[in-house]
Image (cartoon, rainbow, N blue to C red; front, side, top):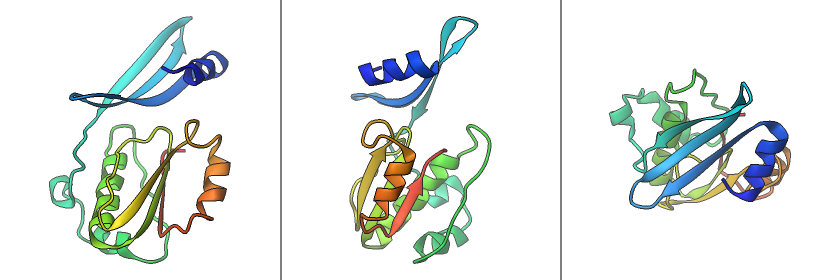
Length: 151
């Protein structure tokens, strides 16, 4: 936990962030207060972005992610695969279309590499001060796709 995250925890009594352990994995961390003690949940974020086939996603989503306009909402309970499904969709678009894909997350979960598209990852609280500012300015950054993480 860095100093900014520590201050957030002291103020809000909870904090979310991602950490990378070289040669091991990335982890999503949720730190919280419970009965005057500090608790935390740490979940592994696999480095490999699974494809549609591995996740058994409907082929129709390949067409959806390639559309020029639209809104896609992915909803579900904790651990149901929302972030992983979105990562697969973004990766498919990245492999099959040139453009600019921007993700706004807290924290960034899957780190995409540039393929046919340029990927910009923005982490709220690290790369921008608020969701509002990130989203307002994202529209000024010539996006073709905007992924908004859990809000």
